[in-house]
Amino acid sequence: MPEEALLHVLRCKAHPNRIRAYKLLLDGREIGVVRNGQLFEATIPPGEHVLIAKVDWARSRPLSFQCTAGERVSIRCETSADPVAILKAGFGLPGDHLRLSLRSQENLEPDEAEQSAHKAIRKRQLLRGLAWAIGCFIVGGLTAAALEGADTPRRVTTARQELAGQLTGFIAVVGGSWIAFRRP
Image 1 (cartoon, one colour):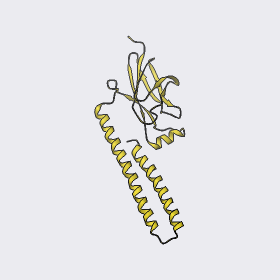
Image 2 (tube, rainbow, N blue to C red):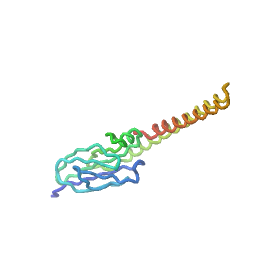
Image 3 (tube, one colour):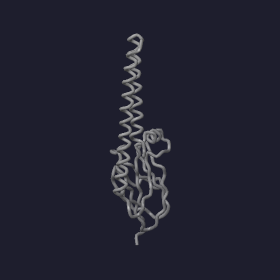
Image 4 (cartoon, rainbow, N blue to C red):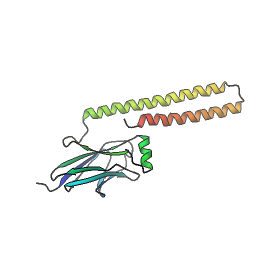
């Protein structure tokens, strides 16, 4: 009978930090790294443990778990593309940019239905973000056209059009990005 437990950490594929390896800290000690879309395996002593995933500028919330000798503990590591979570992590505030969760013992890999549902949600979010950005640029163009027809000196009209264009671009990019990349 084995004297140790087996720890499996699956890092789900994600765009943010895709080329960075996450350090895994078990009870405050680094036990290895996990790369994008890969599975990390290690033997650990039985008992209560705390696991943290860490990249240079962000870390997950601590995940506490208990294991017995011979048990397999399966943990899923996910990365959020939510701009708010990324911003909070960048300032060192606790957030959900990196998330750890316990998985069932039998099914570590995400099932097909879960993957297809996630893809459908991502596609819908991307389309909504794109629609937002296109809508903002249309409104900006209409605003610029309305300003051109205004009864003001040419110099003032041009400055107003430039400002309207810059604001429209900013709102389109920020709003479209937030809609497209926030966590479902």
